Length: 219
Image (tube, rainbow, N blue to C red; front, side, top):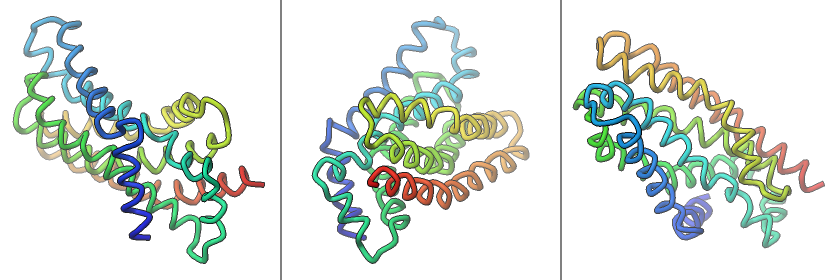
């Protein structure tokens, strides 16, 4: 499992510029918004958390279609299915590697990009915490979508169509938690705990659903 984890991190960083592509896409979304809404700093501060969450969500979807594609192309996916280790655990490890290689850099870049949106220190801190709590749910949801589309042409578009509607609750609770932290620290905890619950829930459901879809696609 450790070897698979390290291998997937290397592939995630190298393949198609994975990490760099996600950060650049995230940066483009955030830097273009101020040109569209104008120089109103108060407006940018109000919409900043939502824009950054949407940017992180879309950027994290970029590499999901390649989550199982390499193994499918070289035939190693069948070997992984024949291992004594449960396929669900293998998918879980691959999801963790994808999160470390493709999503964690976005979270690290988020405080710097928050400066473009004139966000306060409190909102930046809340944004980072909510992204850390909620972004794993996006990856686990995406794993199920990637497994369904692994044998289909143009899988990237199909994965986005399948995954994006399911990530809306994560987006809602993430943005709500950031706004709650800015307006009143007390209501921050309920939406933040909901984010954690979503990540834990999909950490169980996502890999299991992905393993079922992978076995179905191999038959």
